[in-house]
Structure formats: C-alpha cells, structure tokens
Image (cartoon, rainbow, N blue to C red; front, side, top):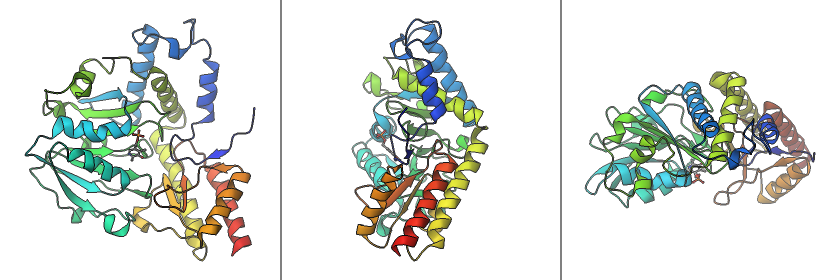
Length: 362
Ligand SMILES: *Cc1c(COP(=O)(O)O)cnc(C)c1O
C-alpha cells in the first residue's frame, strides 16, 4: 500500500484507518448478501439493519433524548440553510441568527428569502476572530428560532457554552464539530451536520430534530423539502445515500470502540492544547488571530511572519507528509483541521515539524 499522509484537510476529511479497512473487507461482498453495500436495495433487510444501527449508535453516543428524530438527508449542510427557514419561517415572522463566519453568513442569506432575520450577535467587525458573548446577544423572545454555528471551520472559532434561548427553539449547524465533545443535546430543537468533517464521507447530512418542532413546520412545501416527510418515512421516502450512511455507521462504531465521546473529547483536548501551546510559546514566529477563549479545537488557524514563509511552510510540510494545511482561500494563512479521526500522534509529529521550521527560519 502507498503511504498515507497525515491528512489535515478541512473536509472531506481524514477517516479512521480501521474504518477504511473495514470498508475494504466488506468489498465486493457484504456478509452473506452476495453483493456490496452500495448494491443493496435501500428496502432490503440488510440495509435496514445498517440504517437503524447508525441511528441507534448516534442516539446513544450523542446522548440524544427521547422525542427526537434522526434523519439522513442529502444536499449537504448548505441545503439546511434554506430548508430550516422554508419549514419554520413565514413572511412577517423573524428568526435570530448569530453571525460568526462564512457559514453563518450563508445561512442568513438563505433565511432572508423566507422571513426577517435579526442578527442577534456578530463577530464580523473583527474578522470573525471571536465568539460573541451570550450576554451580549440581542435575542428577540418572539423569534421563531435562534440559529448558531457551533464551530466555524474557516475562522477557527468554536462555542464553549451555547446561549440560553428559553422557549425559543435553538438550532445549530454542527457540521465541523458534531460528536467532538459532550454537549447538552436536549438544549437544541434542531442540529444539522454534513457528515464529511467528523462523521464520514460526503453525501449524507445528519439532521436531529425535536418532535415538537414538526408541528410548527409549514405543511405547504414540496414533499422532499418537508422535514415531516423524512420523519414519517424514516429517511426512506426516496433512495438515500446508503453507502455514506453505512460508513457513518462504521465511524460511530469506531467512536464507541474508542471509549465514546468522553474519550474522544479528552483526545481532542490533548491535540488542541498541544498545537495552541506550540503557537503561543513561539509567538515570535507563529500567531493565532483568534481570541484565546474562542479557539476551535477542530480547526486551528494561524499565521507565520510572512506569506512567503507560509508558502514555504506548506510546501515543506507536504514533503514531510502533512497535507491539507493551507488556510481557506478567503482568509489565507495556515489551517490545521484536527477532527476526531486525526490521532494525537499526527498532531505531535506536526508540531515537531512546526518547531523545527521555526528554528530554521527565525
Ligand atoms: C462545511 C460546512 C458547511 C457546508 O457543508 P456542505 O455539506 O458542503 O453543504 C456548512 N457549515 C459548516 C459549519 C461547515 O463546516
């Protein structure tokens, strides 16, 4: 086998090697079915088992209380940007949005097609380098819902404590930090995430929706765009992304075998603490623009003294087997994505490279 690199891509992102090997072992024949998983009927007993197992593992690992539905949809997290307001926001009604980066901005743009958006808080004035304090949010109690982005994949910021929204439903885009640490899942009325960062490959979007929210949804929508359709049909109204869901199931099994969210969270803290300590202890060379208490433990962004050095850093890193560290084209610099499947060893070796590079180029 050709050598695998330490893959710090922001998404699609690295998957656990054991999961990739499991996929390989299940090819070209899955169990006694006589065919591969992607050839199974989505109505077959064998696929039904995969589907329900993925749901029950997610419920267990993410501590999803009863009274929620887990959906496997398509169209990416980006389709949730419009599907949420299309279902929950009518003309004359308003929704609160916290604007913490490029993804929130896109969500706001889509919501404006359906109703009024109240930007309850924003970090745009400082290039999204901090998370607005909950006490500073201007939440409107008559709002239909509050929308937040739990982890800002491009800006490198992350929520520590989510706002308390009282009776107003809280909705979160958790595409880039779902299942990276324990949260109070019951605080949310809707959680959504594209799978390709922390949960599996591209092609499936996870939506976790509270039953109570369904009665508030606009009934007068195209069938495929109504949450109720997918709840009633258990995400099998049409042919779902069966192969992606199967891989999500394998990733969830891997999380469970690794010790569940507690163990994953401890590992993520270890990785993030190491990387940020190397940045902060070498502040004459590396600089993280994000305020300390807002830093993301999934996507760390930082700068070097010059753009030329950043180019050289990315090129030398690639030679040494570290990939995907170029910052998003909108912000530049370096971005290191350390999702669940990136082992501590990968971050350790990368920080050794950082220290070595700094010493040689100071
Ligand atoms: C990647 C990402 C998206 C977009 O996801 P798609 O599945 O590509 O539509 C949305 N929100 C956040 C926070 C992301 O990181």
